[in-house]
Image (cartoon, rainbow, N blue to C red):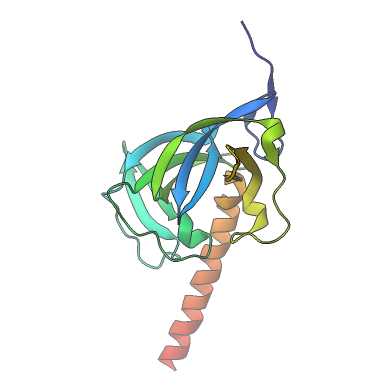
Length: 183
């Protein structure tokens, strides 16, 4: 039996007509979610190699079956303090699609909760103000048991172009600081 599949223009991912599954996780005491179709796997936190002169939100890289995968601290990416490591801290491996390529990125989260199915009619548009993260990072607010789950737009949060621009800005800032120190 085949099911009709619709592609979500905001994320570029296929989604069932009326509901989609989301992986929920904790970050700084708040519940967030990412569409399950973007998730490759969840691994234990560890074996990170720090890379010099990277932006604060890049924790380092890991070797994932022979591939170098950058690891982003979502908390720092959202402008908050760095994620405190606990025994429940883990890395969620996500595939991020850009124009012609797919990038694999790991994100550090406090703890993974569960996979939820959230009907499309239970997802509200992102609020225009009042959130602690950029509104373009939010795909919607899912209502689950009278609570809200912040559904992330991984295409924007982990935008390869956006991360590259920030990296260039940081590099230029470092160059200016180093030149000023030399004078």
